[in-house]
Length: 280
Ligand code: ATR
Image (cartoon, rainbow, N blue to C red; front, side, top):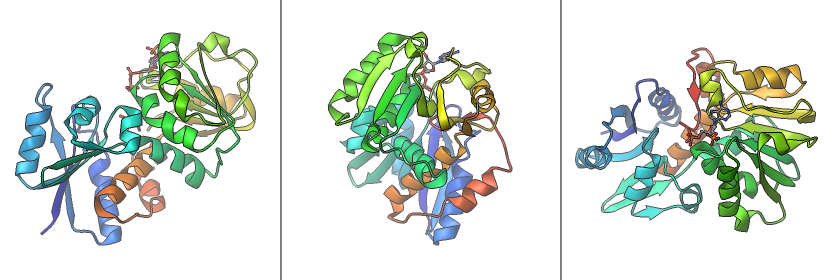
């Protein structure tokens, strides 16, 4: 008998999670059945409870339900509490455990797949929406020298910095608008805005990238204006497909206690582009 899992969202038809988890299961000889679960707006709790009643063991949660999943969880991991959102639910008897694997997926892609250590680096995070909330904790845990969060709406970046100030330890944590970035240069620039999905990008200064900088775009499946901007200024450019696969691997580990090899799954996905964002 296979254990039942699904990705729940609206929309959800575009999700690559079923293919990714099926590949992980084949590779690790885990007996799981992983489906897509479309959910009407306003019906999250009822849909989840029906899935549980049918024997479901766990859910990946995508847009726009990560906050409802947070509220539904009866027990939450530290990283879910930090993010204020849940992308991984596990059901065990009466317990609904909520976790968030987005940030771990990002840092693992950057450090393990792209070979870019974050300790002591100067990081710029673009955007202060839900995608940024999910990754600030794990970025700070990597002990960068600085983490600057820039956003069009500066107050949202400031609120994010306030929320994480206690976790900054020896890292300089600061918020600003794009125009206040001035002459600062960064080793790693992460685009967590949703601008790329609409073919847009934040207004960035010309000399943003330090030598050998990494420019990380959370959108995958298309070349965004941010990626073009970064490439034209000499940065190494990565899209969010690796983050997508790594957050899935982390969820798989949470559920099954087994860590799949991500490289072959990532390589297979590279062949089938479809634009969306890793933290969605
Ligand atoms: P999500 O939860 O998917 O991150 P969100 O919470 O709506 O979505 O946040 C979207 C982020 O992308 C925000 O940081 C937003 O900036 P504002 O807070 O100023 O709205 C940013 N964003 C979206 N479109 C943008 C654009 N064209 N230029 C700059 N930033 C943009």
